[in-house]
Image (tube, one colour):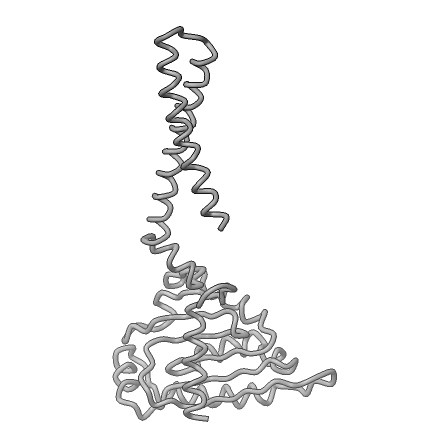
Length: 248
């Protein structure tokens, strides 16, 4: 309603300015009074300002529709990291701020679990944070082929993952002041095309897979849940929950 009133006021202002200019020019030819000249000049100035504002508004609308950065921001993409460009430090900070849950989908799991253990993440679990991990089934041909391309042994990495999980469980201490968190994990058999770390359902670290290139050497995106509208992180949460229920 307010936008409609504003547009109507602009249109009436333009019409009024045109009328004033026409009448002013007619008066100028008749008697050339100074006051009439001032009014005409102000009206012309108003028209110029109006057309400049309309041009800026149309340009901004085009940018809002077509500018990729704006589209990404509207979906909750707040940062992009290329390879080792300081991305680990931001990931560590996000994990250290977890309050309720950390949900992870990866191929192997040993890499991120080693990070969590060296950062004493078991203390967060002792204080009520739940860690859920989905890792690929090592019997899958996809994982075997990925291991060959990355020149690593998927069976060995899967064994390391299980060992780290058991070691972290031993480190967890019961919380005397509240609920103690848990560590749970499952293997999935579907083909997952990205790695994701979801923190409290509000933040996420999303990395598309490029088969044959290790995750830490690829581009990662930091996601945030938006207050208005759908966020890309909502799809990540939905996907994780669907996979988790499938293999729980």
